[in-house]
Image (tube, rainbow, N blue to C red; front, top):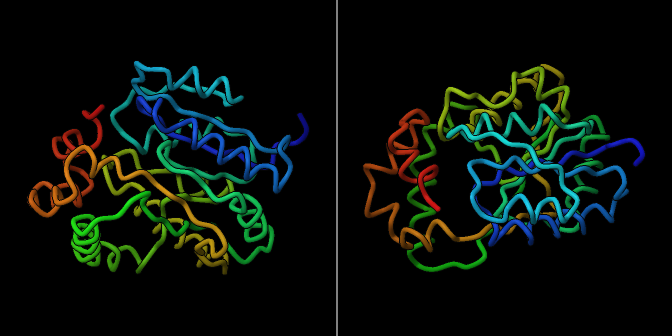
Length: 245
């Protein structure tokens, strides 16, 4: 293998139903750059299914972190990464075949410190649409506090900038992505670079949370939803994220 340019990090907790599609999407996107310069790291978290076997069969490097903390799981992968450019994506999501090429274009331009991606669900319903609107309205104060709208879904950045801001905040059990984006954007301002959003690429993510809990669950359980928005409510995070599947 030649020099590694990209490291794609995937947190994974019992993802045997989804991770194969995620890995295949990365391999397709690698064809638009140089496949030999792309490494895939799967961070297995308390997996009891075939997630690790599927990942290894696809050529991914498998690491283990059993913390109930998505920030720590992401950090494990990025810290072990050999690539100059880092992309993080969830195991139940697929990236566009143009995604890695567009990330390389933006980071090599010197204009961007990093950024996120547009996202859509693999299905939509009235309940999901209203839930998304409800979540968005509740996140407005959080986003305002953190410097305005910041895209996420699939983060991309240079490893040196990840290290400069101290990675993902492991004191948070939720909203670690928004916190990371905010701090990355602040670093970009210092370096006269922008926090961007991929324009030609998007991520398609599964609707499994709605499949598991119901399309109206977030609205019907507004107290739990608001507790998740604090970022530090362990019981709420366990109930919604860590103690499922």
